[in-house]
Each structure stands twice: as C-alpha cells, then as structure tokens.
Image (cartoon, rainbow, N blue to C red; front, side, top):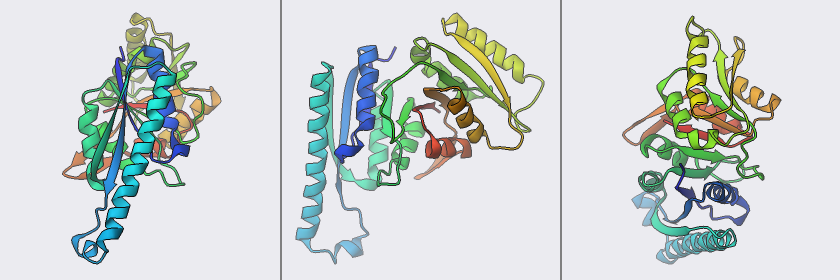
Length: 277
C-alpha cells in the first residue's frame, strides 16, 4: 500500500501540477502527504561571489526563501481543502545539493513526485535522477501539461524481463491492483527478441493475475524505431493514462547518468510515468 508520499514543491504557482497530482494519489490511498520546498542560496564560484555586492546576495537569498514559503502556503491550503494528513518542510541549501537532500528525504516515503522539466524554466532532471537512483524508492514524474491527476483507466507496464522493470512493476502493485486495465508491453527488436520473450511475458502476466491485476500482454515489433518512441506511440494509440517502467542509469560520484530510453521518455512523456531503479 501507499501510505505516505513526498512531493517537490515548485516556486512558481503556475507550475503546481505535481502537487495537485500528488494530492489525487494521497486521496486515492488515504495517504499522508509531505511537501518539500527548497530555499536556495547562490552557488556561484567563490571568485564570482567576491565580486557580487553582499546586499545583492542577501536579496537573492530572501527572494528564494519567500518563493519557497509561498509554495508551502499553497501546499498547506490545498491539503486542507482535501482534508489530507499533511506536513511541509522548508530546506535551505545551495542548488547543487538539493537533489541529494531530496533523495535522502524520499527514502522515508513510499513514493516521491516531481514535475517534468519544461522549456519554460522547470529544471528538475537532476532532482528526478537523484531520487530515482539514490533513494531506493519509486518516483512519479508528472507532465508539465498534466491536468487530470491520477487516472488508472489503462496502465502500460513496460516489460523486458530485467531487474529494473521487475522492481517497477512490484513497486507499482498498489496502483496496478486498482487499474481498470493493465497492458504488459514488450517491445520486440533486435536487442530484445529471443525465444524466451513471450514466455517471460506470460509468466509475469500470471504473477500479476495472482495479485488480481487485469492484465493483457502486448508485444510490439519495433525494428526501425526507438524503444521510447514505440512505448509512447502505444500509449497514445491505446489512450494509456500511466506508464510504469524501470529507470535505467547509474550514479558515479556526483555524475548521474540515465539510460537512453529513460531519458527519452522523460523528455517526451504525455502521461505520468512511474519509475523504479
């Protein structure tokens, strides 16, 4: 079950869609919801900081703090309207440290929620990647165009027989059990095609059925297009409302690298994406 959720709060009120989505998940599962807002200090190199007047630096810090406090007020008001159990946290840090701090916070929650990075200024890639690869917990990324909240009409589970995909499907079971329909989607191309592909799908479908998940296997040959394109095309064609997939990548020192499919899905997603690593 999903009993607690943490959401990264955006400073700009026009970018509160992840918060609104997280509220719909909390309502569906009667879960506790925590909102985290970051108040940022400038993280310019030291020699640059020496050249910036101290009053300018103080103004930058104060403006970020006020924006974070405003995001918390909006969160508190929205949680009260929904009669949710909720808490907020204001975290002061430099920008480069925020992803690691959020990942540490997320370890104490069943699920973390973020807004997709967008062309108009939302830059959450580092935050999403750190939470995915360092928290040990699943994440949901919400499209910046999302207006629907949590919808479980048709969930598309991406399955290749690998560990990240198995982890994602297991972590998503509370959602899958409530879905009206679940597609177990296998993208068959030169990399994944082998004699056990369909058997793996049948076995995983049987596992899900034992959890009372209404599942159907979908195998799509995709020799000439990328895996991400095939997934997104299937979601669009079948009116999918949520993608469940393993998040591929690795963290090395402070460098976080996501696999190509994960990166491409996060860039072009049109429905929320549930990921585990």
